Image (cartoon, rainbow, N blue to C red; front, top):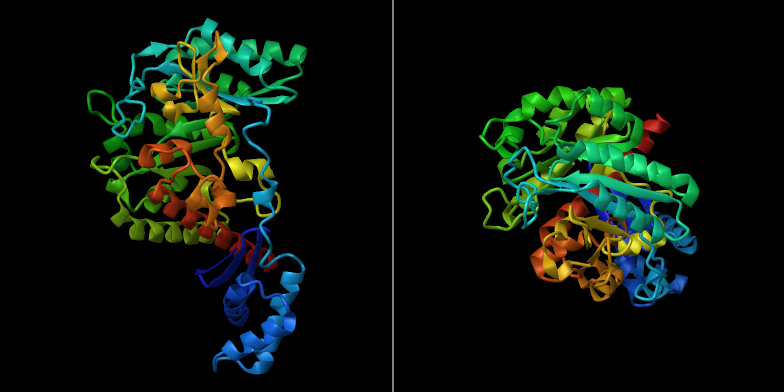
Length: 464
């Protein structure tokens, strides 16, 4: 599978199956597009390909130029970097039969929140249910379950999530201490992370987080007017002025590493690149601003007609990132961070985040769900910390969730970068975890294209 596109002056060719990326001149770009249908027809004979493509060449190129371009393309093909066969479809092991090894938990330490974010999928922390705080006893059982079901895996991940986890701060600290006590006797290492809206963040919390948390996610949407519109307190006042200096201190005390400021853009701020630039201007180097996922009837929802504007915004943002890096003012944007040399292992490229199998969410009362976005939907209740996983049918359904189980993913050039996307979004918009959230897919494809273009520009900068 070949994907070709032009962006910011670069002619980019992706060979999807091999993972090879090529930045080429105009004639090679054209020759590849002419060759692809021939290869799809099974024509592999070099002489036949040359004759067919030369006859298709238009007046823009001489036969000598075409011959030279073809030789370059054929050399890439011979090296396995163009028109590579799909080895992964046959490689896909039987996901249903593989051993289930749990490697990560999302602990809903608090089903409560001190903000009233208008787009909150968790209904201000309630998750379709009651407000509650996780007890130390429930959290302890969750960590015991993780250790017992992690097999030989050494590195385990636990995210303290909500609602707002700082509303249950003592239990967070107690669970971190308990997790550390499990490490040496069980040959495990915990990587703890914290997601917070910042309202209750203070020096004591920050000192502990800097010592114990491998990553801190700080929720902020961007410009003051954008943030305060969607992330107010319950009485309506904005939270921007309170949290910005706190988050700046997080970034500074963590040496601009191992944190993210994470925002959500909506129909109300389709010019979201301005929010990203605003966060960068505040001094943040690690930024993630993502599209809201909402039903069309919500006034803040991203609609299909918004897509052209949003695709332009990603292009603008990519160009801004290149400009700032050239000026020595660079920052990282989460969705543009792609490893073209190594990247995720094959299993992760095929099956994604591992929700429902390797990754589970735990409610304050100890119920297991495939991930935080499924919490409260009883169909997806997997079990609890006392019984373990009892709903094996749903677990096995998630085991089989991979890019080859999804019709739209099979034909998508971005499938090995997004690994099939979010199962929860697919279910909420198609009724099937193997379905697709079409708006999200369009945005993901554009993010991949921009990320690769940035890599091409960085290569040019290094050569200079």
